[in-house]
Length: 364
Ligand SMILES: NC(=O)c1ccc[n+]([C@@H]2O[C@H](COP(=O)([O-])OP(=O)(O)OC[C@H]3O[C@@H](n4cnc5c(N)ncnc54)[C@H](O)[C@@H]3O)[C@@H](O)[C@H]2O)c1
Ligand SMILES: O=C(O)C(=O)C[C@@H](O)[C@H](O)[C@H](O)COP(=O)(O)O
Ligand SMILES: [Zn+2]
Image (cartoon, rainbow, N blue to C red):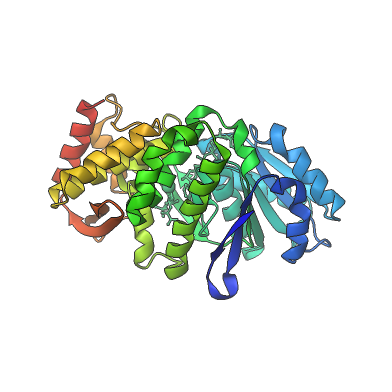
């Protein structure tokens, strides 16, 4: 078992990464002081529940916990205010009180939704992350929790750190291939923003990752969580450095919203967005190899690198302006300067962004 520490003073927590951790969940809950006197609520989704809900519930019950569960429909459309209200109803019916915890068992959708429920229920109760996707090595760490609005991604949310993250790598074996690739986008992102050697390693080991080779996956997720924990520990609430974790997300979030949150997976949209940022980086003077390496690394993981041709450029530009990175009338982008390093560029000309979106549509 590996662990990574997120260093946030009295809100610090560990990320436990290993095989079979779900079977030992209750011992981690007890170690972290989760109360057995107040009910817990596991939030999961309709695809994860049949695989892992029973095992987790049974283990927690054996450990003396009273457990309720709610399974939302799988997919991004569950990250909504309507679903949040349903969860609050379930929490009240199950008798959750201020000493209770909400447990997210699933990918980033469940993590963000359940986390926002925990942040807002009774003005904030404990929250535990049990990620089951590759992508969730990113979403389960750092405390950003949110639901979407039809016009903009993650626009209703909070910062609410988990008590701990229990990452059982054996749950990844049931992931469909598309979700494996999607999750690898954020792994590659962690290399691109922080670590050139790790970026090269991702490209060289892409096939092992796609085949879910346990050693390769364990290493990649440990490295990815390490980058995320390091950045978050330095800037919990995104007053500066943390914005680098948004590489590819300005265009990516706009694509997700324009696609009605049901055509592109988050990692796919972010992959396309990272290619857009790499093109922007080259316009700002980065060597063209930065764009080429970015494209190769993403393609080797089976990710898309072009905007679907049917998407309307005006709609993409309009969605982009609702993003959190559009403020004081200007677009702020994270752009690469070299592999392993990025800078935050304010005042990016929207005409450039439009040209790049058009270029990415022609490359589809
Ligand atoms: N909070 C953050 O810092 C942060 C970071 C990155 C992404 N996100 C958010 O995360 C979300 C994307 O997360 P995701 O890619 O995990 O999506 P997801 O939660 O929708 O999971 C992807 C798909 O895989 C299924 N699934 C999950 N685990 C499975 C398993 N072990 N076996 C079989 N199927 C499984 C799900 O039901 C779903 O159909 C987006 O909403 C994104 O905005 C948040
Ligand atoms: O943790 C962060 O900070 C990130 O930016 C990680 C992103 O991968 C993630 O998609 C996040 O939810 C985006 O944040 P947002 O503030 O742009 O909604
Ligand atoms: Zn992301």
